[in-house]
Length: 457
Ligand code: MN
Ligand code: MN
Image 1 (cartoon, protein in one colour):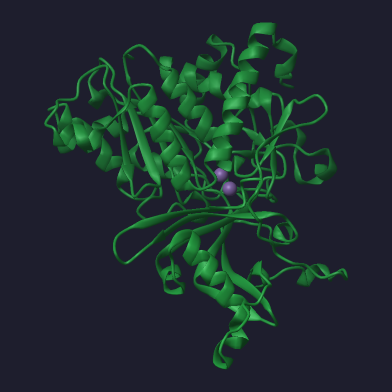
Image 2: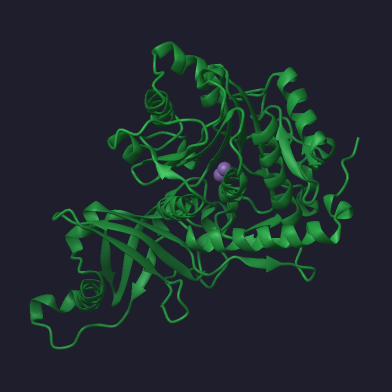
């Protein structure tokens, strides 16, 4: 049974809507290259459509009621948005979930060194990067430096056309596959010009001294401030249309900002007060196992729902348990798209294809479905019906061949509450590469799917 290519069904009006969404999505990718930048942009867009901080509403003693749009943020890296519906919250919510962290190189806490008149920043990679892909690319540095005086300096170098870029070198000669690039070799080249007229005891670090002066002038930071910094090295440059027919998008961080952005767009689009409370939960730390205070394994979401119930005047431990257990979730993350060049990695009947719409993964995992959530059949049927009712193009897939592919997601963590949850998302080519490719049609169908889910789940 083959699913139809979504492009074949579009009329002019839909194509215009798809292009508009694709443009907004590319702009979001350019503004949000780190989880912090994503949260800042999401708050901005949410407030522009009438969302308010749940925390500040509670502080002001305002009661939360149907029709209210509120958001909660944790440590500037995880965010939950709620559009409160008419029905009791203990009856459950319709939840769109995705992650906003992406594979990258993180600058170490003591990163700076000079060797033979070249200066480097040492990194520790974050998530499943394929190390050989990160050398010899224009790179940018995004992040924050938190200073002892409590101030936080935002850093962004390499995106403006006038900015310098950063770089990781590679050898001229071809290396053997087994020794391609080691993690410790992913050091960022950031300077080569020594400072003149230094006293003798400083001369051996003259290039490093020059770089430190530049950082101090531009950001007011000293070498020790790296100790309390979060600096992320990401590919420099903007998201681009891809293909002569402009049918695709090539960009950094589409895993999983493609699902995060389309979920957010659907959420912000919901104008009328829904029957059931709608929720969009965008989390950090998925790429390293969903651990930490801003990952899905934290109590952030549960605590936010507790606050929401309390703000509505109906908090109890049981009401909270019921709100979570009675919820339905689309837990969205990207699927590796079928790539004819690597056909051996896929089982063709159960692969995700570019252009065939949002992907449903009843289960993930590999080698005996290990670690998978495995959505309930009745729930899969309900989701199918919602998508069909709203003319959403969808396909089903596994994450690669039975004993070959696999991959972790966050659905199993939400499932701990006993809620209905299924893995879904957008097909991506070259997943986890510095530049990943998606189909505009799939971006559009995901957005349509999320809108339909918020209405009818
Ligand atoms: Mn992902
Ligand atoms: Mn990933």
